[in-house]
Image (cartoon, rainbow, N blue to C red):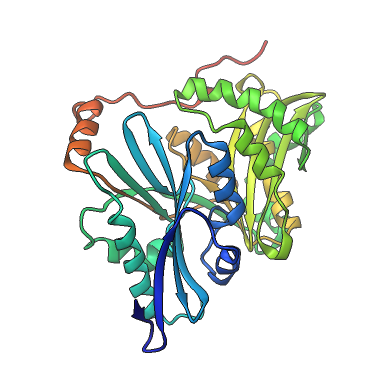
Length: 362
């Protein structure tokens, strides 16, 4: 028990489930993103094998003023506690009514409680902070025990001027030309919540995951997100940007929307159509059109970990880089094992874009 700002004492509790007023806290934290929402977290719990939730809550006079949610999973012999998942952000939520000093104090206390859950040599913690969280709290973590920071920048586009401004001042000429050529040649792009299009997209996504040699996100998880409650009481929504030719899906993005930000999270396009119908360009354009229609002010294209060329591609749509931090806490034994798997510096094989390895369809 402690006090915030010299006021009434607060209590911190730990549980394996989200409280009924969790989304009230999400909406009360201006820095929250869709991946803090209850529907995202509950979907993870249901759809990932063996996943559990670990939830820390802070209450003052019965009101939820802070919290941190993490996914508890077994990966082989390793136990992972992640307050972020698959390139998304997480970390503590803090009510806007708190003053700056109180927010910093509760942030550190939640992180320390989270760190205390790492017991034994085979438990690892992960936590990614978005740009505003990184700016406000990243420096605090520099002196916090054994948290190791990894740079995780993301590409964002301002939509403040609406779609006309985006097209005129953000989209470079060659991307406008690619969009127009793709549409003239029969491609269609639209935003939808129809699960049938997501199902067809998932077959394409599995091909890309095999190329990238990554564990694919469960199909049930994507469908659960799309089939969510919608933007009920402002608590976020999910939509699918689909690019198709006839009944064939040649690209798509699953977008996460909360407040003034849309995150184009899970996406892939068919490289066989890359130079004929430009599905990647159409996906990004479709994301921007729908995000603007919804009144969002920012479109987050995410990180570009696969290849540097993808980061450059995003800049053609007016994207600027925002700094995010991904923080890990592991035992010395796990750090050594990870270093040995990577081998000598520079010896790792850099992953390339799927598009760079397949020829254009004849």
